[in-house]
Amino acid sequence: MISPNRHQTALLTGILTGLLAFACSKEDGGSSKPAFGSEIQRREAPRVRVSPVVQREMVRTLSTLEPIESEREIDMLPRIAGVVTDVNVEVGDRVEADDVLAVIDRREALAAVKEATLAVKEAQENRPRLALATKEAVERSASAKLTWEQAQRDFERNEKTNLIPRNELEQMQLAMHTTLSDYDAAEIARERAVEDEKSGATAVEKAQLALERENLNLSYTEISAPFAGTIADRMVKVGDSVSSGAAVFRLTDNENVRVEIHRPQRELAFFGSAARIGEAGGHEVEIRAHPEALPGEVYDGHILFLTPKIDSTTGSFGITIGLEQPMEGKAKPRLLPGMTVRLDVVTERHPDALVVPKRALRREGDAHFVFVVREDVALRIAVLEGFADDDTVEILPQPADALAAGDQVVVIGNRDLEDGTEVDAEPWNDGQTAPKPDPNSDQEPTGTSVAASPNGDEDEEARQGGAGDQDGNDDAEIAEETPTSKQNASGTSESTTNGGV
Image (cartoon, rainbow, N blue to C red; front, top):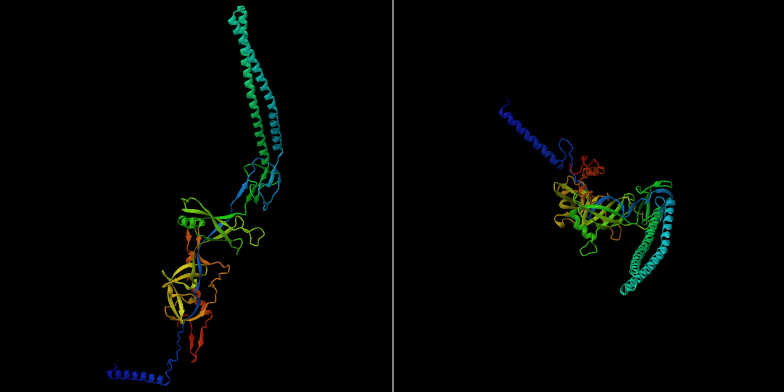
C-alpha cells in the first residue's frame, strides 16, 4: 500500500516534468513541431472552379416528335375494270394536273362510243320523218273537219226546207255523222303524230346522254392525276388486271407539307389567339422543325388552323402546322411526307435571363441555391429556377439584386461548401456556358424544353433534370489536377483534399 506522502511526491514530480518540457519548447523558438515527432495535416482552402453568370434570352419550348404529312395525298383507284396497256410514270416522277399516268384497254369502250354515236345519228334522222307525219296528220284533220262541217250544213238546210224525201234526208244525216267520226279519228291521229314528234326529240336527247356516258367511260380508261404532285408509290404494271377496288398509284403533293399535334384544352385560348394573328389581340408563336433525317437543318412553321372541337376522350384539341418548303434547286433540302421532325414551339420568352451552368445549381429539399465567389469567399445565394436547356438553367436570385451578370458562381466543388467558406477559385474551362449571343447571328435562343405526349400531357423532366446532379464527379475532377502530397519547408508531408484536413 502506497502511503499518502509517497503519492504526493509522485504527483509533484510529474507536474515539474511537464513545466520543464514546456519551458524547453519555448526556448527552441516556439516550434509547433510535436515533442514526439509525429506529423500532422495542415488545412487548406478548398479548390473550386467557377463560371460567370451570363445574361441572355431563355425560352420555354414545347417539343414533340411528329411525322410530316402532305396536305393532299391520295391513293388513286381506277374507275373501270380492265387490263393495263400503258404505264407512263415511275415512283418519284413529278406530274401535273390531268397528266395521264396509265391506260386501261380501250377497245371495248371505243366500241361502245361508236354504238352510242350511231344511236344519236339514228334518233336525229328520225325527227324529220316524225315532223312530216305530224304535218300530214294536221292536214288530214283539217280536211276531215271541212267535210264534216259541209255535211252538217247540208243536212240542216234540207231539214228546214223539207223539200227532199224523208229517206234522202236520213242519208244526209248519216253522212253528217260519218264525216264527224272521220274528223274525230283524224284529230286523234294528229295528236298522236305530235306526241311522236316530241318523243323523237326526247330520243335524240337520250341518245346524246348515252353517248356522253360512253365517252366518260372511255375517259376512265386513262388514269389521270387530279392535281400536281409526285408519284409516291406505283402498284401496277403493264398487263395487270385492275378494278375499282384496288389502288394503282399514290400521289402526294410535296409542295404543301404539314404536321398535326394535339394539346390540352387549357391551351386552347393561347393557340387560338396565335392562329388569329391577323386579328386584334393575336400574337405570333415561333415554330421550328428539326427533321431527324436532316441533322442541323431547321425549318420555319406556322399555324394553319385548329380543330373546331375537343376530343372528349383525351381532352385535347388538334393543331395543324404548315412547314416551310424550299424551292426546287435550292441548297436547303426539301421536306418529304413521312419524315419525323422534332417540332419546337416557343411559347414564352425571358429576354434578359440570368443563366448559369446546371452544375452550379444545388438543391436541398425544396430549396435551390448557388455559391457565388466574392473576395475568395463562397457565399450561398438562394434562387428560384426558371427556364432550362440541355446544359444551362435560368436562375432568379432572392433577393433580385443578390446576383448580376458577370458574378462568378461555383460549378465544380460546391458539394460540401458552406456559406462563408474561403475557397481557391479557378475558371471553369468546360465551355458549357455560352456567351451572350450576337444579335446579328442566326444562333437560336435556348430554353426549357417541354416534351409533349400524344394526349397533350407535359413532361417537366427537361426543365428539372441535370441541375446540380453532377457533383458526384466534381471532387474527382479537381483531384486529378491537385497533388496528393507536398513537402513543406520543415519536411512535413501535407495531405490535401477538397474541403478537408
